[in-house]
Amino acid sequence: MTSAGRVALVTGASEGIGRASALELAKAGAAVALCARNQEKLNALGEEIRATGGSALCVVIDVSDEEQIKGGVKAVIAHFGKIDVLVNNAGINHDRLLMRMKRSDWDSVLNTNLTSAYLCAQQVVGSMLKQRWGRIINISSVFGQMGQAGQANYASSKAGLIGLTMALAREFASRNITANAVAPGFIDTRMTAAMPEEFKQNALQLIPLGRVGKPEDVAHAVCFLASEEASYITGHVLNVNGGLLMG
Image 1 (tube, rainbow, N blue to C red):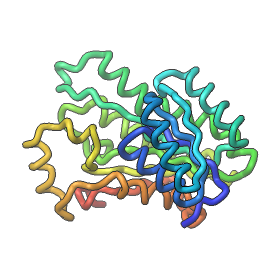
Image 2: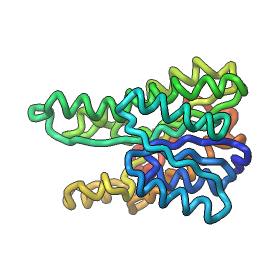
Image 3: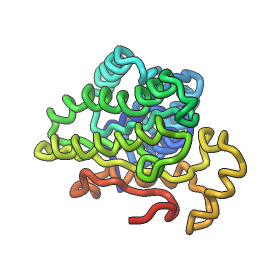
């Protein structure tokens, strides 16, 4: 798989799945715009990519802020001239049982995980339309497919990403722009590390492959969907969950 000559924008690129995806895309030949809130982590990742001959631009963006998204996308296009691939990866969780969930918990998760994906897609699709080529990849979750107690906000946001993916796939297919989602299961990231140990052990027993996934497992799926080899795939949800959810 190759992404030579392509420009990819990855949100939430400072760590976890976003970081791994940015590294894989750079390895495949894409120039990568690294977007997140942490300047120090972005700079370190940018240097890592450049040290291996890749091209990277670090742009500090809080995706819950529409104006920062607009300004960041403009900066990326001004630097690289275009955006071919968008990876909507940025996400947060504020887990609470529904009876205890504050409106602010709901709003912040929906804004960061779902609304930001709509805003980012809206800003980058103009560049894709001009070149009649594009890849939109939304990072959903197995919990957006099967639900999870204590995660009404998170599960809703990730299920919403799947609906958004399918809508965009139908809207832009005639312009050779595909939209797909990747739905990770339990992946070894800072977010899953914060879960109670008993919960993680119980979940592990439900995974047929018998292990927690790595960020690289998801990144490989992202890299494939960003490639020319995935040109006839759109509106699809690619499960990367070790068999936790099938069908």
